[in-house]
Amino acid sequence: MRPLDFRSDTVTRPTPEMRTAMAAAEVGDDVLERDPTMARLEERVAGLLGLEAAMWVPSGCMGNLIGLMLHLQRGDRFLAPVAAHVLGSELGTGAWLAGGMPEALAWEGGLGRPTPAQVTKAAGSPGPYYTLRTRLLCLENTHNFAGGTTTPVAEHRALVAAAKAAGLAVHLDGARLWHAAAALGVSLSDLAAGVDTVQVCLSKGLGAPMGSLLCGSAPAMVEARRLRKMLGGGVRQGGVVAAAGLVALDYLPRLGEDHAKIQRLAEGLRAFGVAAPVPETNILLVPVPAVAEALAALEAVGVRALPVGSAIRFIAHRDLEPADVEAALQRLEPLADLLRGA
Ligand SMILES: Cc1ncc(COP(=O)(O)O)c(C=O)c1O
Image (tube, rainbow, N blue to C red; front, side, top):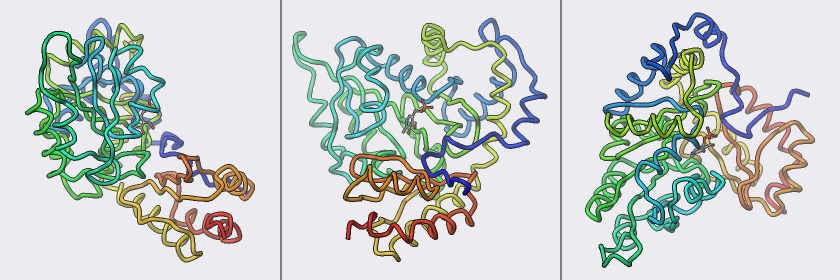
């Protein structure tokens, strides 16, 4: 039985078009000068986000880390929504390497997001030299562990305005900002408005084998290049992978297809009496009574997913066909009791 892999949108394989582009990529030494294909990718993504410059990094974690390092000095506090990737899923590098002290903000503005008032309150006001200094607000759109939830443009702007009024810089973890823009029907630049830095991933949902872009002002990216080199992320003929990234961007207009696939999965599960919410983007969190037991049962019928707290996370992506979703529902129907806890 062919496994149906809903674990993540990172499990996709490069397409034949990507492999062809990789083989033909024009390259140079990106540490000594600029690799021309990496430079093309950086310019294209900076343009999409409405920011001045961009820098390729091998992973989303490195993009976020460099973003944090740009904005924080040792001992500075940074704010992020509860369960943000930078808080719980980057092995503490925000503290260990960027020197920041994390503070989680509850989701009082909706799933995955704080309110501007919370930002203002948590930022406080500058005190004497011996007071803790809060320097950065880190947002996440879509919010992975909230279930791929979006922050609409008006709320994004209000959060950025609150941060700026309190003297904070703003970094946006936009690993799946593409998905938020597609779901909300707005431009990427609207969702990045006002931020100092944003990180977007080519390897999540778009199908590239690796690569993220950190974007911001041109001077910030000059410093970011230095930090990337310090972290071992300066690559030489990176155009070979950047070429796949450029092809991956062609998938942007099709992201709605992946959202439709996960909506269909959720709808099918609800028809079996499972408490599946209506997903906003390509992620579905299904709360279950016994996660390990349910996951083992899923694996046994060839449906792969991952645990997120007391829920099972399903993610749709371009390597799953609508027919695969129907096949998954057929395999899951006999397990409905486990999924609904009856
Ligand atoms: C919201 C978010 N940010 C950052 C990352 C890190 O990306 P990478 O795995 O490429 O380091 C992920 C990975 O899933 C993510 O979901």
